[in-house]
Image (tube, rainbow, N blue to C red; front, side, top):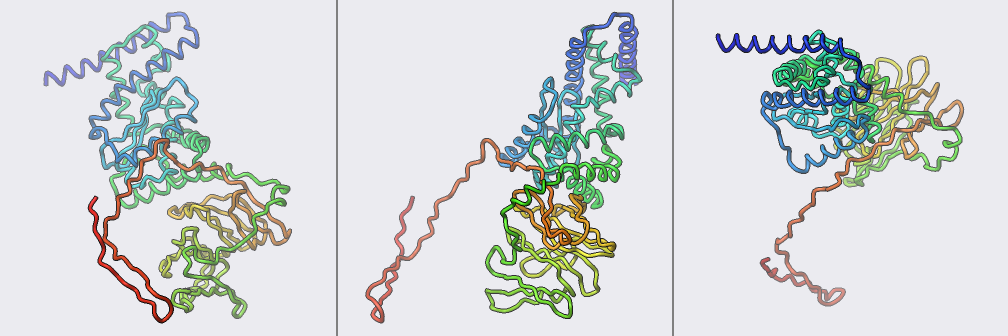
Length: 477
């Protein structure tokens, strides 16, 4: 009891000390703006450092991922750091050794991800960049300091006062740090989250990442929450539905129409990927009773495959660049329009996308095979061009085609579609995505193959040819 009362007394004393300093500050003349900025930055660093120590203790300390994973995460973080605007902040990234799925930021540039978040995201660079960009944005916008001032019932002059009078009082800083730790659990305000989402996506795009990464990351985290995993993200990052909607709208703004002159000069011919990249299957289409059906020739077994029996009509079919999936757009035997992703053996009967009315006209793969763009016609005939990650559930509108899309193409110029009424190509440019290539890649060690192999020699010609097989000689390394 005595220790508990003493703790409360120290806490109250620290709070009173802060209030007294504010009152004294109001009687002092103003300080130069530049000097105030330096003092505020110092205060941010002090309370952030104090809170960071407590965070490490409460979340199991620091986790050190395997080196190949570390260099990738570090490359993502360094690129985002380079895109950040505040040069007065030295950003640091710490991975916490906890299975919880969460991420947060502290004033002074302290960024935290949990081991659980990285593991469940499977190290996807775009999703990780989206989460890191969001947390860096909180620091860029000083959300932590502003929230702390509101929590203590003070104004921004509090922090300036603490530093102006050179008060590096350990009790005061410790109190502020403890409040910050609690706030990482409850999260920032609703508006602060919206602001961090918007700036975080901008930072990611400037650093060469896909704006769709933010949409995909939110998609991914919502799926984990439905799976009842140990989620802390949505307890500290609320309003996920509205945030998802805003992220979709913002992501759309990065796709810009391509000038008609550029499209007229586009030289890449339209070619449907009908040949399996792995060289086994060939696609062909035939018209039957007014509907287009898909035929799949299995070159290995010299026979047609039966996969098309699942569809009453097929409007488009394309292999993914790596041959892992066959994307089929059409209607099933109940005349429900959808897009199916089949594996190389025709498995995957659950639609990847499905609509109650309208139809899917065409589709195209991105070169990495991670994203798919498709043309969807509504009942009134208007056509939307939408894009999504294969593992995601949310699409982003990147263009509208009015009526009639016969062909869809994704090449180095962007996403292009052939517009039937005007008999011309239209399109949008795709935000540039720079692959993650660590500056110091992990060397690949190739182990020598010591398996013995027989020695084969050929003697003679024609009918007199003799093949001799000798026992292999083994030479130890």
